[in-house]
Length: 293
Ligand code: F3S
Image: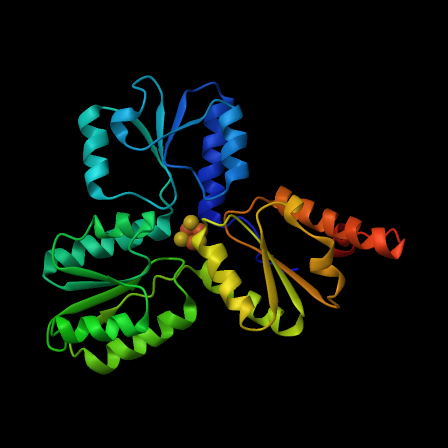
């Protein structure tokens, strides 16, 4: 069991705030699902929390929540224009990247951002860039960008999405350092992401099956799966109900990890189901949860 499995600091903070407000009777609306986890979102819905796609859909008598991924500057402007009450749960590590993007753009640097251009966090970051900026997903794309925009002699600042693949980030830094003369690199892969991926990498080397628990829309869960798949058979589960007996029966050593947006409750359920499925066959009373306590 990975020690780093489950909620990270930023997600815990944002989800905790939504529960706190909802349970105090305030009308709560989140700008997009609070986290990439359908289970948590459904539970919040039962408490009356609803989701809107843009500030103009938010109620004027409630609180609008900005999730940990952050939003572009234009959304803050819109919230202010509408006079909405807002609780900003942008993770401080993401807010730091916003600051870098804004300051470096103002200085005239070209911004290079490693990440998925469609991911809300990257959309938020690019929304703070006021000058030339490019997003790349792979080291090969970075090579092509440097050539296409002749970035060798131009002032360049480079950062990444907080959940970017640690190995790809290392390669990107090497490429940029070799090719760009006026470069400044900001190491913005989140420590929580880096340690999760590193632990998953180490764990999966000693296992013959890795179970990654998390939502299929979660970027950091997908990265964990990618890291583990290189070393052993890997399955991704959103809930314990998705676990199949044949998945685990032929494995001798099973490793478990979970994305930063996976609640502890779901991880526990997976361990419980895993024990039940094995006990079913072996006629034992073994409990993974107890063994890991
Ligand atoms: Fe923040 Fe890192 Fe989590 S950036 S939201 S603590 S993965």
